[in-house]
Image 1 (cartoon, one colour):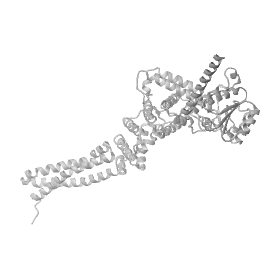
Image 2: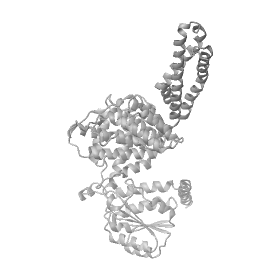
Image 3: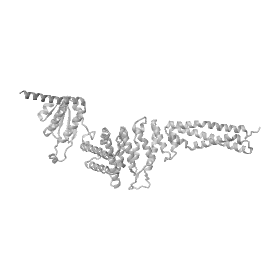
Image 4: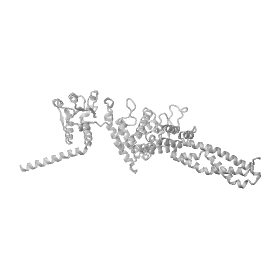
Length: 559
């Protein structure tokens, strides 16, 4: 029996198969939903629906369903039977083939590594960059380091392309214009901003700050635009406000390296202006740190350098630089262009007096830089671990049973002031001002004693020798001086104080003022150690003083 190609049974079978595909379509839609659930990305789910295979599959499915519905009405015309069934069979075969391709595509979307290679397709552009970044976010959430590195490498490549470097066409003296990034880069940075705030398992994006190394590309001849500065300020605001110290440290390292390479030696007028702007930005970053009371962070940036001799490209390190920066900030705060700088503080409300608020905060930071200069000069000589060094003296005084101040000459005024202050807080202390007193006092010392010696010149031998003798007896020793040397390291601690380079200044300003300044600092820090108990002692001192005065008055009236 010859098979009838136009048999209703065969044609109906084709229709049934097409209908089954129609019933299976919701399952495919569920698969799209799983893509969204897996990656938490609308972009990747939408990308699947825009795939050529998926769209062709949809068209074939619709055509097959149309043919399946129209079969009963068209097969009665014999001249049309063969052509109709032939087309229906071809469409069904194509549908089956694209179904196979579609399932392969779905499997590829379930594998993040395969999906990344599929999306890149040998080219990274506006059409796929945001999808790639969403894969980086997915890798971050799953702690998939390799996928994260691969995806972010593609993101960084996209950014560097916009910097416009073409080394074949450039000459060494060419200066490129500032880079203005497209909306995709802005969107990427906005997403990064959200991960800086808190660590919800997104370990890599929360702590890693590789994006700065790309925006501050040391190999690029392009210049940093105001747009890039503004975007970076937004990110830094988040890191500082939400206490992301790791992210900030990486930022400062990249920025300092960029400054050293790009701006340390510049003669070009355009680059000089860029250097001025870059320095201004980082002074304002320091201001932001001070405003948010990130004192440890300030200590880190005051210290950080990667060059010898030490170079601090992001911090004004001379009085002239500080004054010039103050004038620069004052000038930008008085012009309408100030609002364009976007020096906003996340915890402050904006208003008409923003420029005044920023200026006051900047002045405080620059004042702190002035204090920093006092210890900057001798830092390498004396092995101080901090340019804004707070001595351990308050803690040493707190732990000591007896405290002695060794002084000669005019430094005795400082010692007596210190003795009066600390006695009122319950410290057993005494000021010794002569060499015989040094010798007798040293002979009765033990490891419960503390000796503070004062020698602004660093050459008062009686003080230096007595401190060494006290140390041999087990006492802790602290030397206050403006001239550090290797012998100073023999003491428990050496505190550097400011001095005048010219002796003629001594006639105008007392040489003891720097020491009195340190007395204020140490007293303040000492008071904060068990403050409540010290306040009770201090208050009882004044109560006893008042009571004794009252008793004296009564005795005087009786007599």
